Length: 213
Length: 213
DNA sequence: CAATCAATAGGGCAAATGCCCCAAAAGCTA
DNA sequence: TAGCTTTTGGGGCATTTGCCCTATTGATTG
Image (tube, rainbow over all chains, first blue to last red; front, side, top):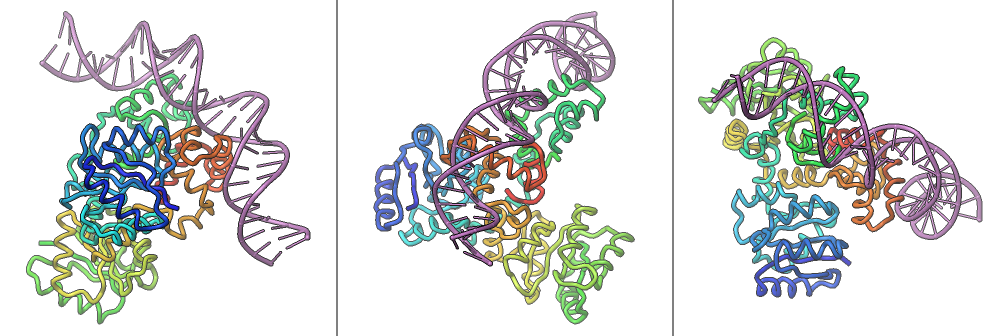
């Protein structure tokens, strides 16, 4: 039984989707959120969900931002973005935010069925055209303007970052850079603030994603 | 003028490719290497090349290993892999090694022309079918066989790894997977042993390097 | 010259981590 | 069935981390 949540502000479209999903025995719609905030609140209560069908345009918190939150906080949940248009910008934003599927709202029940099963088996359901665009985006982050985020790290902070990412602890980094562990700690705190992370794992991940190392 | 190098052991196919490329004015074939080693030797003398069309199967040093070397030593050079088959394993290996394009050997001159121009403009030329597979590979590394074999992580351990890499702590991971924090701790200890690391930062780094996430 | 920033360093403290120990249920397999 | 792995769960404990706080020195820069 695949547990599905729905985030869609248009109640007509939501009901249509629920009806389509209801045609299949192995789908269970756990809940239906009316916007991004509602979705996050609902997940806070119960995050035992496999797949979220997420409208890209919603009031309060849109699909892209909501997906960001979901994939950060509940990485086990797979997000399929719902949209009426398949423009490159939307695809780009969706993929960046962590969505792994992309469906047009007028999809047939069978297409939805296939997509959800594909995603549960580890696939990335999207049309070949969208896949092509997505791949280009993923493989060529240099071509995307806002991916080249500058965190404004100082020279020393970059050195500390590099060492931190190899798994060294404060003492070892201090020894390598011939400074005090307390200084290392200060540097790391500043790096955390600049890069908006709050622990090592997140930092290393972000550093790799943005090709800082 | 786009500078192209060719790495292809089959002289008949090589000549065919050179002929196809010769149809276009803005392509200049700088040299033709007969295997991976020959390619690296040639690049040692002259690395002023924009694109390498690389056969995936070559004696001495195959296309995947040669691409690894090239993208490590000459990151400005873009590699397009040539193949007769488009099996998932080949695509996976190519992407891992740093190739950003993937062409079937029977491609028409126009397809080759388009691909080379696309790669020069920052695209990732490949057929939609290949793009789909590649995307699945990139976005869902857990689905790739030999990644799991690498460190022999179990299914559950892979799930924990994924969550850990996003920066979640034991409690949050436990909540997401609906298990006890103690179990999460046990899993992580086992992952550490299997992957031969001793803290989160090292783990995240290794996971990224081996494209486990 | 004053202001800002980078780099240095320290204290305190709660929380998280890493590393031992152990054990049991479930599942597969030879 | 016996033996293996996986998944689950727990206790204890030293160390590390993350996050507050303050503070000095030197360089840059308007």
